[in-house]
Image 1 (tube, one colour):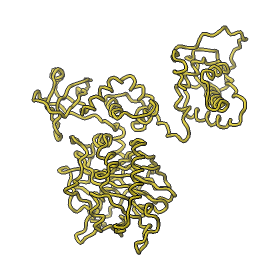
Image 2 (cartoon, helix red, strand yellow):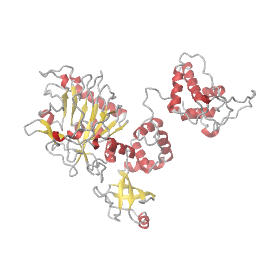
Image 3 (cartoon, one colour):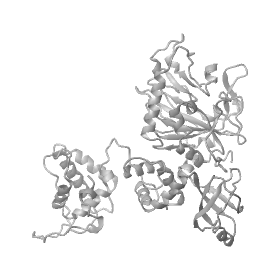
Image 4 (cartoon, helix red, strand yellow):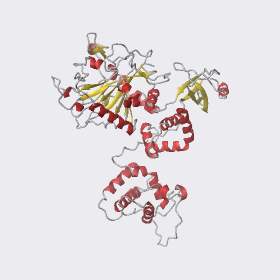
Length: 594
């Protein structure tokens, strides 16, 4: 039960309730030993330790002993809570839950707490509980609470835009759960800080949400004019603002101005048409990130990959998983050529069933699930290695999380990896129990299989089930995209079938960089963004459970990169490669193509 519901007139700073004069003999509190000294704050480790002690009290029939270190009753402002205080509170609450079958009368509970431990006022005990409620009620099997950032940072306009972009989708759940999820995606501020910042600036963020719903995007203008000219422009409604390399944006108005060495101000840009007017030419516009933080963008370009926890909601993941099982149940062997999937150097897929799968939904089998005569060695649902390659175009469930997903579009825009990204293929990787795939696939990079000149492949990988070391979680060699060249490419051979074409001769002595691979254990709904040149791998699934995952790839569109006819996957007149962005990225951050 919420404390505010029990005490509607109670506020944190009201102090203790009036008390009758204490008729007991007043004694000076003993000096606590060093181990019991008051602390400057309560850490999660202290609460976790207290909860372990409370769980050990399962057979206890008496209420716990109150803290030995007694202090005079105060308003709570001058006395810090000790580890002993925390342990007492957790044990006493657990004791009352056991003795009252989980239906604790919280009004009576706080009176008992104060009676047993009066060195803190009742209001102070309640305030402490409310402040740490998320930690006290957190169970071991719950999703871990977001970690605190290493350093404190000021909140910026970009943070307001991130909040607006998140809340425009109207997330469901309690306030604490919503902001904990948000902090996992944007860990540069603590979740409590995000929550408080949103509370204070809610009107401004709601105003941003309204603009996002109207199709407008937030930008920052770096004005290169003199300050005098800049101020005169603030009084104008500026139309037909042109950014080099992008579609013109219109109806730009300054909303807030903060002067620095570049005379920077926040403005909003709408793509709606408008009549001609004043043209501001001496300025540079930079769009604010709507989903990714700058730390996340920097991490991607440093490591070559980035994991975004809880990118998809539970409902979206359940819909994908249910649809995957339905597709497997509908798999028919009657018209299937028994195509097996392998990408090792000594065995390639070359039949038409594979080469014409770009605009279809087709099934590819595990090598170890089919014998030499073509007979299945296990039930058909457990024999499929992957389903692809036109899911993002043809299947409503997977199209919704790919081409029709505003968050996916925001990530593609914020990352600034492409000017004009296009989604070209998608697949469900089944990773079947005990035999499940990619065991023969060595470390590799995706640009080998989806080659453009210059290389521009970008992978998006979403697990539908929990990924562990046992069932084939992905591992990455951080930073290898900066040092590992693309030495070959997977192509259609002139004589038919597929094979590898050398880009750098094998005798050139080029070797992949060495280092320690990092395993990324993921939860359902996480998103892993994979640079096309970063080395990664996935071992066999040696567990007894499946590990379904959905993945798709983007490449750069012409004229920024060339995707030629040698590639095994080709667009068709009916289903060309779908563009991800309505407005092109005017600049990109990928150094190899910038």
